[in-house]
Length: 189
Image (cartoon, rainbow, N blue to C red; front, side, top):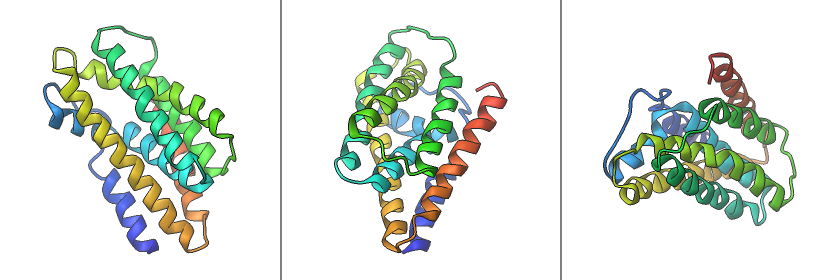
């Protein structure tokens, strides 16, 4: 089970490569966008893994908070509103989500929702900015499905690892996520 969980995690990250270009158009483009950068992939996997590691209502509440806030951010970005430091905030989300996962922080559900939602808005703004001129409904449908899939991969992977009664590999994913975020911040976001 551990090997399968790690394989799923690696396969989910493999296609990611820090925003190689702009996308526009339909649900397929929206679906592919979260996979276009390690920043999005790692954040979404980390939220899923953290929610599974902590458990309870958080398993559905935290990913749902991410998706909901990301949709709001997507609408903001699609409307052409700009905010300073969007990419830096996304990189910072990796540091924060990574630390929360690595340290297995037992945050109350509501606190986790707020922290996750704040960062998810910026992920959504980035998605929405990429979709300028595109059909927002179709594009958003795609990135919502992809995000849900990435959260699910994080949950399933973490649960598979935890089932072996060893949360250490899950927590190490948190360390790797935080390090990736710090590296992105050092590069300017």
